[in-house]
Image (cartoon, rainbow, N blue to C red; front, top):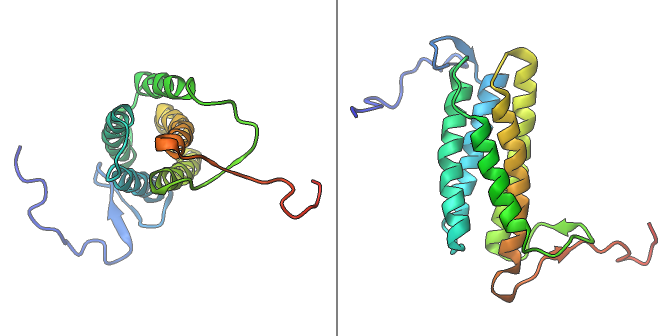
Length: 186
């Protein structure tokens, strides 16, 4: 493989536009860039999460997710390009079912936290939800691969479950929302 970037700056974006993979120019704050930019942000947070000590199954899963997110970003950067498939979504569902099977049933809402790895995973989950919203906005303007949206939806669920697993690791616990913490019934 040759050099991907021989020059980092081009000055072509100085007018507030950027080029998509098909050569078209779009506004830097438009739906296309918001979508793939938020997916890139999510990928960076997952990279941060991977700097923590994680169970092997979670580490392997998140490495695969990073590659998938890079592919999804490429898909969102090149109109009409398709990479993410039903198989990608199914893989997330299988991992989600496997990890969730070992967790106790939820009886209260969970607050982000528990330990550093779980907290970063919750941050990834919330950015994933934002990426999903950005893709929905883009879908109002352009025809894109629906499996990318399905993937993000399933990934946010998976990240929630992973955060639960990580919070409980090494004898830790999840941070539960306290309904009546001020003595006021809800």
